[in-house]
Image (cartoon, rainbow over all chains, first blue to last red):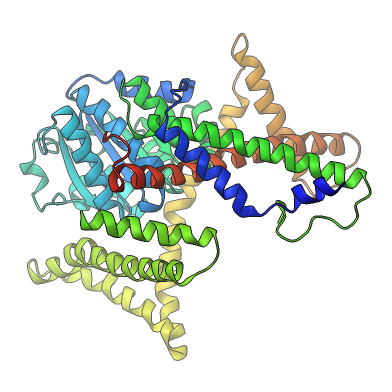
Length: 284
Length: 203
């Protein structure tokens, strides 16, 4: 079973090269694979789409550069949908490094949809303290954010004028890469009964399925796939949809590698190869 | 232009670790840690200390902010072995406040609301199958994690079924994790090919 031993001893850098090819080739030569819609993302889209024009939406973009690959396209897609629907967005972040990213998502979406700062959206910036901030917004928004990110008092901004708590907003949307989403569910939804839509990284997505079933959240957008679905729903072809061909191909490569690796290991054991895989093997 | 080249260089430095550890990777790693720490310090000063402490003190003469400021300084006393006792006062205050804030919210959102959902009447049609699966999964996984009785008989059979539910959940989480990691790679490659090398069209 020399070929099996050889297969199990394959240099892991060959696998890296395979994955790299799986990413680069579909980006250069798009396959245009279809992006199928899931009920979770459709529910999120429908919840936002059902809001009447002029409604105020609180959007918290709680992520930092390490996960912006997933959450930046998602934020831009949600914002574009809000601006297209003429919803007024009050945006904020609970992460210090999220200040630049949130502002970038807002300006990108605003440029694409012709939205104007202070008329269509307000950027409150960063505030530390997760639960304290969420409870504080429920009691008095100005206690947490007396001024916006640029130092303008909230009463001077048309979007935030008259907004004192969740009661004056039609919905809270949380785009997050951390357990901060749990706190939004506990406080914004649980304590202040604000309708909540969640966008999260793919790693987190399964943790939030139970909240969909219990209607604690109205919709769930998970990872780059969720962002791609949202882009399809708003008829946009952004970074998420561009990346889905690569995503699908790499998944195929990984599935093939898992099958081949396990089959080789199984054959190796059946043949009584007690030595196990050599150094540098796929199972290391 | 320059920032794109710098970002591309640092991305390639980090990717070089896939071949093997090397000075370029370590340079990028140390640069990231240092610049991230500096950035976070500046943001905390600008967005937390300045508006919450300095401005109320300097402009409003709001002396109440001295109390949390003092509690914050007491936390730093842990840096000295003799100051550990002083720091405990701040920590006790923080733990007390946090527990009071977190426990009711957690119980309401994560326990009561979920229990109510698990016990609600099943809907008609195929949705009832989903509800039945949720209920069976809920009970059998609980049976698996009940260690006060031996896993034998009906309890043991339930626990074994619970293991299958757990395996399916772990598999789904692992699949999503793979998707998340690949997404990060795709974004970096998109950056290299589009913003740096200009071989992909701009959005």
